Length: 124
Image (cartoon, rainbow, N blue to C red; front, side, top):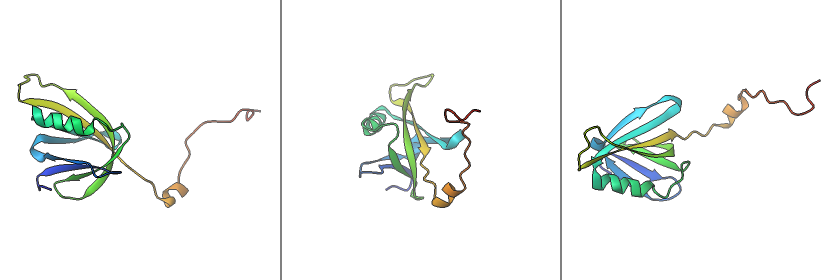
């Protein structure tokens, strides 16, 4: 792995892709949504699209940014975009990932229910 790259690895397999950090801009949104804004030469963005082609929108991946360690995410999909001044050599892709979270047993014990659901026949 290169120091200045982002490696995305399928959690249930050994498929992975490495993207140079210079092509990527990270954005964090609400609800732990992480967006990878990728702007690279057209042949490299085609390789990125091919990598994610067979995955579902809920598949889990490990992401390692510049060798800082893996963190788990859920894949959400790829959105094609175009620049205002689109050139022949670059494409614009946004890869959306959401943090994968697995609560511990202690967190389940303190879980607060917020549902207002009432079963039939409950009303008096």
